[in-house]
Length: 415
Image (cartoon, rainbow, N blue to C red; front, side, top):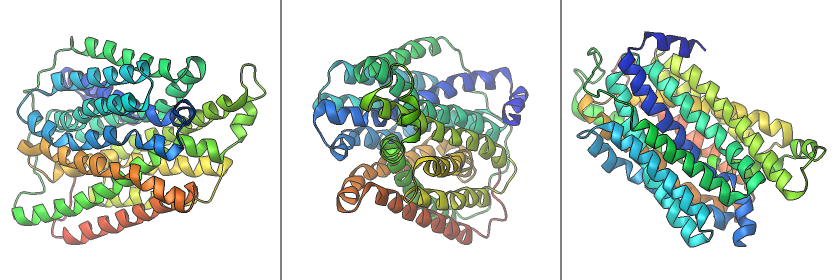
């Protein structure tokens, strides 16, 4: 909670900036992760196997990342606030269409529209924070908490609405909430010309060629992180349904819970509980981003996540949930550190573009996880998908070590 206590040090203008960016981050993750929560019901509705249903989301996740680059270039020249509001409205529209016209072709197209809207937030929102808020790490942490709240609530809200009213109504309701929020945020005034006091940056005195080399190595880490993130997020609700039974059995003793819908709802509840680990990780990561050397903190969080994602491949029920919570704590908690590291290693004038490159790699190329899941599951098992993701995380850790060795001439990278 100390992270939020430090918000008292923000100026009124900085509070208004977070009033715009935090809902944008929340809805971006909530809306892009609503689909995995209804993957199992869609296998019945569309008469398709799970791996085929998962592929319906490919264009959403690809556009989510690929369009970040043109959005970043635009955000370096235009105002961020109207772009962020438009992003929420576009995502809401996509979900409404997906719910209103239930067939695979429309689902793919409308989810792609959600991806277009989602591509706006990260390059525009994070750049606005990094340029206009003095306590960058604290602001990134607070903003990250809202993003992780969207991640954590996506399976629970979508699952609960789907259980009560059906998956179509669930998508329509979530989309309508997005449109209403966008209309309200349009009334909030933000002065984007405000800038924090200038601080020394790590690229001062370092040859541009060397800084470019360091950033390329960091980009490799971003690609690997994106594959691990997307693979886990796509599978988590379904994996919980297939690998846990204790909560579903508990729900079956309660009124109105019966049959297959109980297992699906129990899985979405567990997925939300698991993803709350990332919310607390963001609080810790946000504080450490302003206190620790950023490269070391980045390595610490990713290295700590490895044994837990590996254990997820070989555990079930309560043990699986415990390992998953720990994995999310570290794998999502590192985000304020990663975002601060990118900000510290790039010039202010290219801040939106640098974040756009991050999300192009992280979410765009990371979308290949959609197509990696099916062959691994078909050749081996769904458990081996998590063993594969553990291997990706191990490569990510080794890449960070390479970055630290390559950039050892820089004594410290700090906010």
